[in-house]
Length: 282
Image (cartoon, rainbow, N blue to C red):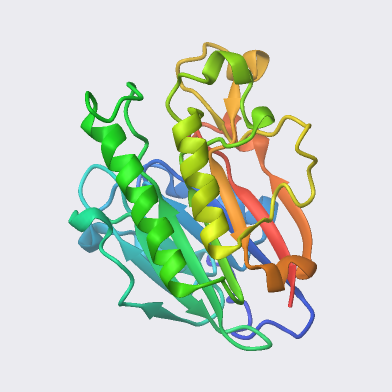
């Protein structure tokens, strides 16, 4: 595979910073698709979730060959895992919480070196929650609600976000038109009222701004995930918006573009999630 030329280490002033979030569903299985992502979106930063890869087996050199010299990853065998791939230097945040005391590699925070000062970036993979939306009967759903409650309490303790971006596979589709059928999915994990309320509390705790819906009206259907169970995902188009990018209120005015790369769902050996891009003019 030809090596891409390395991008400049410092983002030129007023150039739009392109950040992508993607649940890759196995970084080793789908690392060739990272080249397609880079070709289509040309991001400065890629935040991955569900890398399913222990740190000692992370394909570091192949990823650096795509033009991302700055890489951080937290992974484990078989499931979960997050990573930040960047053309820009960053410092890893080492003191962020160990969510639900599980050490299960669901969060990675960094501080990007960008014009105007460091930008705090948080990559999250929220628990999916299983199939039964009953925390008493389903430990996975209880874990999801506990995770969201801890994240909310953490944000309340920190106060309103400043010069920050929070993103990832948050596994909640909060708005009526973030799912193919609001009525049909009210009792389906990812769109239940208790999850929607928990996400709203998390957003309010940090006074976060929805950077994707900033450009797309709430009454317009918008998805980032289509189930593997559908025989023809594109024809059925029964999607959900599970992948999110939030920015602090002080960055809302810097938003210039969003893009959900829907064709990626049709790539060979595709993830069931597609990349979501947001641009910020810094």
